Amino acid sequence: MSRAADADPEVLVVGAGPVGLCTAIELARRGVRVRIVDRRGEPRRGTRACTVWQRTLEVFDLMGLPVADYLDSGVPYTHRTHHFAGLPPLVRPADQSGTPYPHPLLIGQSATEDMLTRHLAGLGVRVERGLTAVAVEQGPARVTVRLSGADGEVHTARAGWVVGAQGPHSTVRDEIGAGWDKQPCPGTQLLQIDARWTGSLPGDPAHCHLFLTEAGSLGTAPLPDGRHRFYAGVADPDPARTGDPDVTEVLDAVRRVSGVSDLDFHDGRFNWRVRLYNAVAGTYRVGRCLLAGDSAHTVMPVTAQGMNTGIQDAFNLGWKLAAVVQGRASARLLDTYEAERRPIALGLAERNRRTYWGGVGPVPPFELLHSRLTDAGAGHTGLPLAYPDSPLSAGTPGPAGAPGPGSRVPDVPARGGTERLFRLLGQGDWTLLAFPEDPSDPASADVAAKSASAAARRAGIPVHLVTTAGRESVEDTSGTLRSTLGAEAGALLLIRPDGYVAFRGGVHDGTALDQHVALAQA
Image (cartoon, rainbow, N blue to C red; front, side, top):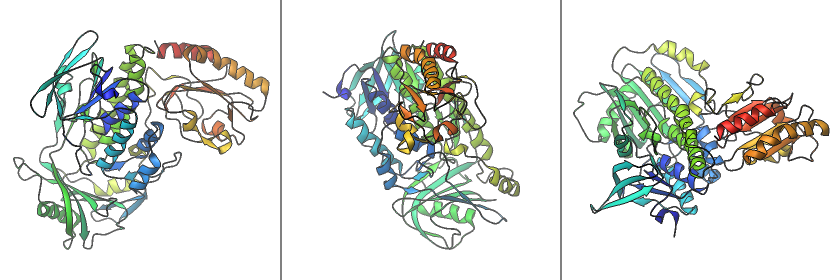
């Protein structure tokens, strides 16, 4: 019998979109009995969230997913060209260094869900479809969820924990009273279509484009099937109008924003109308129920961050919930999930509110925005995201440019260039890197190993001693790993299962490391 068939799993995941699937994978691959249900009888088709940023690709790698095959199924996002009214176009490369996935990927959401579903099935868990959560009741040791089938029959499911990943309309969130602060963006709408096109639309069609004019905003992106995604933020003349737009309505909006009158669409599909709003739940956890993805935060789909942010929720939550379920950490560890992830959602909602232009209200200062593009950072990639203020982050900052407490560890060459750091981290467990003060001196290596071993041994954390001698667990003859991580003077780096630094200190800071490990697992 598969785990999905267990009547009383350790965790019930409600919702089988990318976030729910990632949550279930993170739990199942750690040996947690998980069940996942979804209200839809069949997977939802369509491209929907089609931009997968660099950090999300790293997350998929750390989860053990077939990233190479996934990349082959999409198209690389290589450049973005900005067209601001009255100003020359500005072309910006989309690649980032310090990662094996320098380019974002453009691929339909259904392809992402298919990959995740197949991988989850390989772990022995299959999505149970046609089951809608209609009620949630918490007890001291179990959560009872009433599930309504497509035939109207009500089933009772019990689990030690429940993760709500249903999307914006979340029964789990409403049932547990988590709150939902919804901030609408009145007077504007987003119209979208995937289509082939002809006409004099400027710029390289292999690039992504953003147009900002007095009429509103327009984005385009190439898709794997040869179509392009067009999404236009424009004034909403009739907020009472429901239903998806026809091709003519979308085309009219795109022509008005771009100023290209001879543009035409062919073979269009997935027409979509969105009335925009931001919303973040008041809390991500109530008792034994947790929220992730759009159930925890729904942001305007104009910066391609919603799905990516939700997947990082799942990646953050999965290892923590598994540790609690398996008795390796107390439930207090789950408090760090909200502490780390909710501020990310609040910040994203605020940025979207400030930067979205939908043809309503004061016209933005296009010249000023254009001038600032050259200084724009890489925040949208997910790579700079960090948790420096988390209770799980401790120790010293380290040299400038080096990952400090709460920072992502870059995937750099290790073992003499024959392996990468992510492979040392395995598929998601705690890891301790010990850098001797003198990497070529056995006595110095012994000091670093001894300082690291006491805390690691008690916590069951593997220690990788990094030297140039080749006799230890990690050979760093070229010094690439040492220099990239800022460990030239020696260091102890405790890395979390999700690839962020939990503790950073010198080789003689074993006592402080021991104390932090005990706190993190208390």
